[in-house]
Image (cartoon, rainbow, N blue to C red; front, side, top):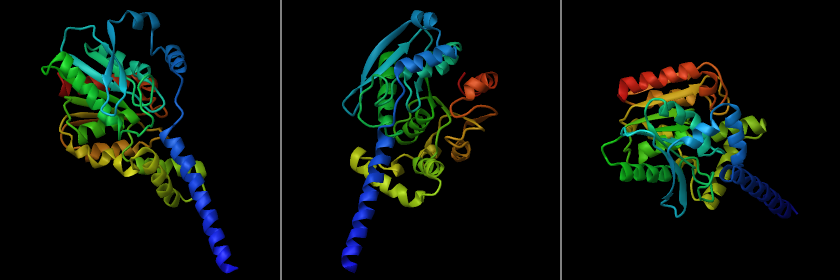
Length: 304
């Protein structure tokens, strides 16, 4: 009787672990994305996109091969002959259109820009979201394409928001780091640490330290990567080029200490702008003047 109870207990634990692992990994790797029209309407209402102005910009839609076998949807906006370019890497659930609020800042400052859809977002292919693990290779493909098209004698920057910021740091710290400068807005420092915090916020009473390894196992099985493979804090000290770190002090989705830790770990040329107002990824929306001043100071100090 005791043996039956023991095995019955194991079966229940196994069933619960499987249910949690499947549910949690599904939420992570197939996170619900925003509809493209929803993004356009929202950003038009916020004056991030001016439809007529956007329509009249000299731009070209391009499809860049990903090393993972799909096509990356990108848009080259090139109003200037100047050899200055910035690539924009958007956040999770968003699309390349949501990068226009940042792209406009650099267009106003004489840069040509490239916006692109991250893996499994917008028009870009890919079956899973990996928060920078696979995405960094797509960013490398975009960087390589820009150099192939525009030549090696260009000034190139990369701006990333949230997941795009983590992708940017992973690209720069792990891969070939060909860009001249980086701007990272509200990055996370470590995916496991971020998911642990978010799981605690959602479940309140369930032990995140016990549940996270189960979720990680299912993500490994289903998407072939681990939390531990997505850790910008472990590679940021390898980046020699200047980085502007940005975060809102009121962000409760990715906590601001993560950016401060990244800034502290970064060696050499760097700047930190902690915005006073705004929730996650709202530093520009809620602190526009200060955000632009930070961009200008950074460019004047490290780029011009």
